[in-house]
Length: 200
Image (cartoon, rainbow, N blue to C red):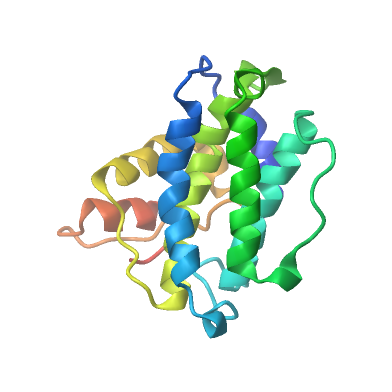
């Protein structure tokens, strides 16, 4: 994905705000952060499954698109300056702390905006769209760094639902590469990743 997917976030179907948004976001962000912490310094320049991107590029995408979305929604008035020189792990921790702090405010998580499907909320979009990013790009970063990259059954289901939600836009330029063929005995994880143009 590219920063073009920030606009795609507006296509996220609306979901009612929920007091569990911070906890659910944490459930998705915790494993992502755990992988980021385990990436060796020298592996950030390794090629990722996202064509043309290194592991560091993938992290930059995750951080940058979340910030762009929050700024567009008026909940992040002064985005932090680029902390690339502090190292990827520290950059992620600072960003993650910022996002969790924002989503802990019901006024932020429940803030409505006009999306393609009608009224949506910041919290719902952070879970439905950016939650998808946290799962699939965790796999991308782990794969680039040579770390274990398995998905849980719940994460596989989340990716399938998200892919369904994208519909025909899933394979738009800057989203996912075309789906790959899989053998009949492929696992559910292999199938969903192949659907997203990735070979497990």
